[in-house]
Image (cartoon, rainbow over all chains, first blue to last red; front, top):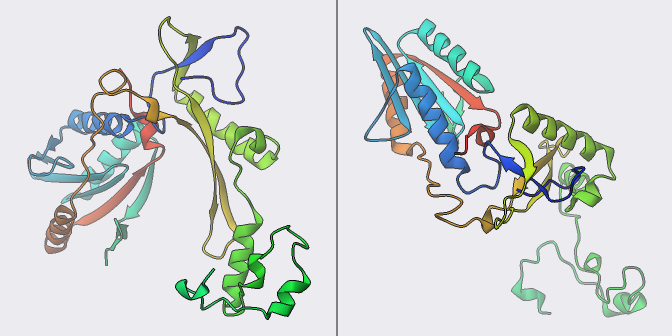
Length: 111
Length: 178
C-alpha cells in the first residue's frame, strides 16, 4: 500500500507492507471470519454444517452456542458462569464490547 | 422544467414578476432553488435537524481535513489504533510490483436530534484495484441466516436461557494477511 496521505519518510519510494487487513481490502471479511472461527475452535467450539455461522460447544452438561453475524455475536447457553468465562476469553482475543443481554439483533427486537 | 412531474408538496411557485426581480442576483443561478422550495410544512424539530446537518460539511480530501483540528485529532486517534494493531510495516517497494492506493474517508455521525455524535475518520485501501488470484483468492464470509436466528431465539425462549450479545471493535482490522 502507498503511504497514507499525511505520512512522509526519509527515503523516497517507501511503501506500507500490510500485516493485517484494512478497510477496503477485498479479503477483509474473509480474513476476519477465518480469525474468529479459529479462536472459537481453539476454545472447543464446533462449527455447524447446516449454518457455518453457528458454533456449538458441548462439554458434559454445559452447552454453549454462538451465532456470528460479522462483528456481532450472540452467545447463549445453559450455564451462566461458563458464558461469563467464554466472554472473558473472547475479550482477551479481541477488543470487544459487551452489550449485556440481547435487546436488538439484525433489527429484530427481543422482548 | 415541468414541476408536475415531481413530488412538489413542498414547492410553491413565485409569480413571474417576483422571479424576474432578482435574476442571477446572489448565487449566479438564474432559478435558485430557494424560489421554489419551502420548508414551511416541516416541523420545528425537523427544521433544526436539517439546519444542524447542513451546517457541517464532510471534507472529501486529506488536504481539506488537515485544516480542521477536530479532524486532525480523530485521524491521530485512528493512526494510533492502527499502529497499536501493527497493521503495517514500512519497507521499500519490491521491483515489478505496484502499490495499492489509499485515502481517508471522513464521516460525521449525528444523534437523532441533529447534534454531532462523533467525527469519524477512516483510512481505506483502494481494493477496487486488487486483482483476483494475485492479491486475493477468497472474499466470502458467512453470516447468520435469519431463519437460524429465529430458531435460536425460539429455543432460548423455550429453555429459558440467558441471551448475551457482544460486539467486536474494528473487526476488519483483526484479520491477518498471509
